[in-house]
Image (cartoon, rainbow, N blue to C red; front, side, top):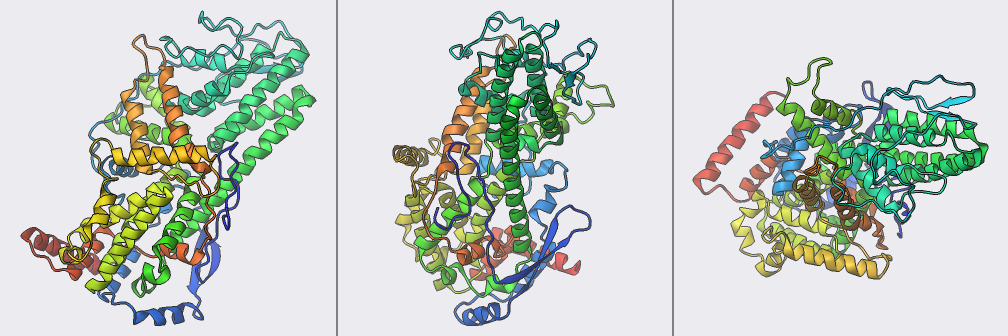
Length: 635
């Protein structure tokens, strides 16, 4: 990608390099925050550029100066997105945040809305898993122990011993496995133990990738990843206790192949302290068992740490960007607008593609599953707050606790949702901050052109964000402004956001774009950026309309495959998108850091553009003015 700052390897489908650094003509310094373990970003305007830049643009725009005080108040009340949700404080984010996200995906409302009660709560079924019992045996000399926080300690020996491997009593699984033995999806009595047993390699068997991927992704519905790793290591290690040394080495090599796929495909699982401790201890013990696999273990470890380091850099960039946007000088946004910064709609659409890909590529496939696990667990806890008392828990609650204990904060996915909502508010703010009707008309036509260009580029997420901004009430109510807007091009766009018939127009366009990209093998400028909220809604539909368990009480393996297939084909493949458009940091910086109005501020600005006419509007205006006066008196 020309000018891009991310490198993309189709074999791993993950963001791999440094995060972009947007130049915004501010000198930056970093000081350690006293209570949180991150660097606080501060800056001061560079007068040699910024002052002249603003002076040149003051005369070109007629922004309502009464907005300045309102925005200053809003800036005082603004709270960093990452601070607000404790993303970097090792604390689970507020469950209210998950409610707002969920409501937004179901209704296409904005994230700024107050949380609404969920129409239905997800029930976590009673767990059918129990922790393995401690294996009674004496630890012999030269034994290697994979230490864990659970109740068992797998033993790995240099020499074969008389200990028998753990038997699996499911008839369909006890026979020797081979690559040709795919698990039947309609088998009604799977348990997590039998599925994990199928994942255990031997010296002549390694499960297919087509089985490993859905199991690693979706098993977290029933079991936290750290427990899955613990059980898999335990069974694999015990399976070689009565094998020859050579067969044991071959088995461990196949095990490392599975572990490598896990760390490359779902590396964010290993951000969990318990998970990483197990991983490090496991590699040490394998190296002690045989020196022939040290290159393998070293390669796996280095690749994983490289991915986690890249994620940390991306999150650091987003954190600094979020703080910079929260403290961006108000006048910067009031004395200019997007047309002055980016005169052509084509150029803006291209820069939006860069922003989208910056945020799309770091997302892990498991985050979509993990997102609803977190919501399910929080709903379960709120619905039954008194069900857990000290050590007395039901098995269902024990399962909820096990899942919550291992939840990885889905920061990259939530950051992407946050960006989508910012774009919507950005569009609305750019329009209503102008008191002159001719400028509002110009901006609405401009954004309609940008949305059409995003559609042409197959950047559907930005297209939906722009249309959402044009359809927000503060813009939609400006009847005198819309009278001058040609409606045909806008109505053409609205067909794609029409929810009737399950977004038929959009889904057809997405399918055509995906087919074209696949046909050209995702070459440069074959971009497909799906509407993320609808992806989330589809995953939610599959999860809630397909039962976790069969009528016989077994794990529904078909659901694993269905969810994995959908996420891989409809979302993860799009991360192969690359573009050759020249990156313009000045434009990108304006889009991602310029202050946007809150919902109340947008309505007040809208009433400044065109006065309240109906009784409902007048009542709304009165309430907003009282709210602003009350808030101002507190400062």
